[in-house]
Length: 329
Ligand code: 13P
Ligand code: SF4
Image (cartoon, rainbow, N blue to C red; front, side, top):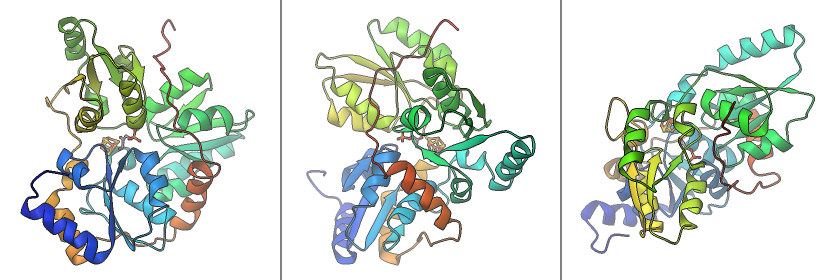
């Protein structure tokens, strides 16, 4: 919390008390939003924490699929999202009708498969799935929960799917979606940064394409990055290939290190425009107005079942391991 509270922060804290709200924020939110949050986390941690909230209101500072997940996992709460237009390019890349047609085609061809879906997807797509994964539990689900005699249809992130395919050795049918942020990190700049920062370590999110992951000392989701960096006691330079607001969290938790963001091809800071829709003003306004609110949709019933089985039951530990990209193939 800032030492001196500005007006808007005081207003938010007062509203939090008066309406009974818990603020959850993803690590890709601006530092000033993470600072006022009760809980910060990656997609998996926030989904699990949402189930434990006891206040009547959850203010979800993240994007729509995350707020919908919180609603599905804790339906009696009023879930507010400061900006309903905070979407995700991965969600957009997988319309449910298109997925349904593709699954029907596979079935008509006699293929026996299960659909493993990244949590960055709509509730309707989740409802068409067998498993939901995040960067934190994907490897575990693919290795241990999908029956060995089933093929895997992995949607919608082709890069995460390809990475999982290579680390687990399980063949997958990959959807062709991607994250608009992670897809455009500049390999050229990354190689230059490695040259000018000898000894620096590259940490990359598995939503990055292979040409970036090949340069990484560590590949993992945002929660795993925090743990990895925290294990380094000696001051180290980290070249960070994920959404740049992540560096606020890394700097707060492990200030002994230096963090340099890998630039994008088209834009030096490469921020997620969807995450950036949330602001302190919109957080205050949604608490004042009690909207925008996530309302229960018919597809939430089935999606909730898949989410519960995949993320909560039984609880899966966050995978924290040093996994470099398998080279030489
Ligand atoms: P995690 O924080 O779960 O690794 O997800 C990254 C992301 O892109 C969320 O939109
Ligand atoms: Fe979606 Fe990428 Fe933004 Fe995450 S960073 S919300 S995956 S567009």
